[in-house]
Image 1 (cartoon, rainbow, N blue to C red):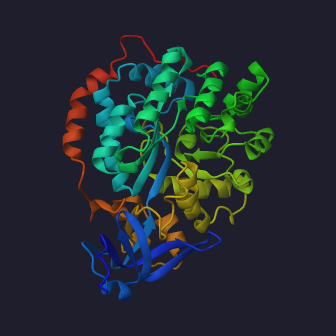
Image 2: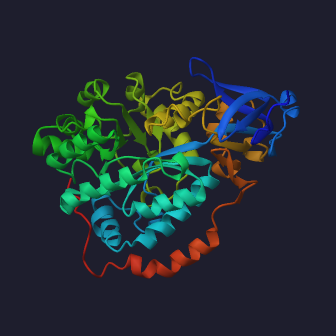
Length: 450
């Protein structure tokens, strides 16, 4: 009996896989067979030649990886790329970013999200976790352009109960949207902008509706020390006492996580994960970084992230992977940690788990969604290849991604975006920029005082 045609066959290529101990392996002269948006098998290129397929991609000489996951960003903030440079955190928020964000319209959010999705697709990102405002517009962009996303409508206590209610309404309305490519979360901004009452109410809503929570917490050491001096508890202890840690929670940054916080995170009843975005920490000259090694030792997933482009200047998760590995070596004083293979694990399975999708994405294996990128290592900056994992982490760049696939659909082929017109988006965003950047009104959406 002739098998039914596959939707897509990618062959021949070298495929990054994981063994039964989750160790990174490379399968050479391989083929990936995709059916109905799901990986059916990873087989030999010779066997794949005999299989019928609706579409084939010749990936000769390329490396197939699971698509990268940006575990924490504010996609529409690409509109503010480079607008608040060389400033301490408090001035960055209060003098520039939060006054500008008081000008946001839904159209500006849509255009920023569209440009951000184009950047991420070109950089091999197939899924991103976004935490921002006017998120209906972001969800519409995700549905149209084909990427996968974990979305939350951010809120502050200064908005009153309406902010929390809007976050819940968004999460329920869009959960499972875009053919299942959209998952949602409740998104209180942070313990320093959302009070205990609102956090406790959020935790209750999360449990009632089966929703996760995505928020900033212990972003830097100053926040932790200020919380201790003002309230006698760390930001992580605030999450425990308000019940947030009883839910599934994704914590952005965590460079201010203290030793006293580690057993709290380890024993949290819900699934706890942390997203690290190292480039921004370097730019802000924060004295500590996410304690990746300590968290990993406790079994807490640490996913890779960029934060928004207003602080990071790019949405390049490839760079986040390399910087995470390098900074971990420096801060631990151990060149054997983080290895390239460990960094690839953070970029794949750990990042998928961080956004609550560990059963659906994160590796190229039968039954997983077909979120795949093809990477070309023939450039002079990646030759010769003595250690394939090291070449991918420390030599390759996001621009080496040739093809990006989500749910079996090709979103970029040979560096050509197929679902977004970048020129048109950039032109329209540019026309609206003077209105967005006007700070003469003297308003800001919030005060940073921590």
